[in-house]
Every structure is written in C-alpha cells, then in structure tokens.
Image (cartoon, rainbow, N blue to C red):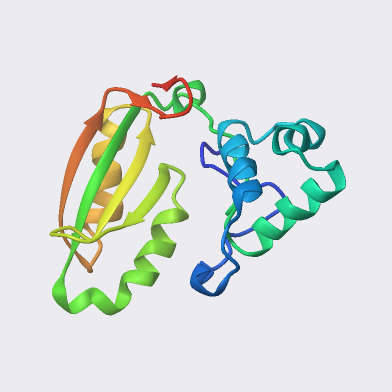
Length: 174
C-alpha cells in the first residue's frame, strides 16, 4: 500500500491548466471551495445547503470547478506512520546548471518513488523540495544516496527532518 495522496477517479495527475482564461470565481464557488477544503467528503446535499443552492446546481458547479482545474483532486491524507513510515523529511535539491533541461524527467522519476509524498518545484537557491516518509534514518540515508546524490543532474541535497506536520484547517499529522 502506498502512502501517496491519490486523486479519486484519476489514474494520473492532469497537466496544470491556465486559470487566467477561466471564468472568475464567484461567491458561490468560493463557499464550495472553502467547504470542500475543510472536508472533501461532505455530502453534496450538505454542500449545496451551505452554499444556498440546489443539489443539482451544486453538483454541476463542482464538476465545472474540476473541469476548469480549480479543484485538482480529492485526496485521502494518510498518516505515513500508520504505514510504518515514522520518519518524515523535506529534502532540498539543487540541480546542476547544465541539467536544467532535464527537470521534467527528474520530477517524473521522483513522484514514482514510494517514499515520496510530494514534490515541489521552487524558486530560489534550490530547485526542488521533496517531502518523503521512510521507516527509519537508514532508509532515509539510502533514499538520498541512491535516488538523489547518485543522480547525474543533482548537484546537492539538504535534508530537514520533520518532527510534526500540522495542517491549517485540520488536526496534527505526525
């Protein structure tokens, strides 16, 4: 069993959509998004009631938000410790200047690894932040050595251990 987040009804992540050309969000959209961000499992009739619209209208609006790329997926947030992966870390990765053209391939390789929970392509001195979960420090060390340090595009890594993960709209995730 994987500890990754997965989109329900989707086998792979869709390409990011350009939201600049999409219709702007209105107050109803914002209510729907707020409620869904707090509880993605909220029943449609309860979501519709919260927004003051009919359930059929609510269903159509949520589908539109998905189709427009505003809602990127519905996820189960699984505590990695429940799967025996008690050690979480963020790994900052700097890519060699000559390897910038291979960033897409590196991202694809990283998200395929079981230890990887999230990959962030970032601005600044580093190129990526990778959120990983492993069973122990030895497994984390092997992950860094085998999948990052040994990669020809990687110039350097810095590993930061995570003691606690707290979500703004939810409870603590250790």
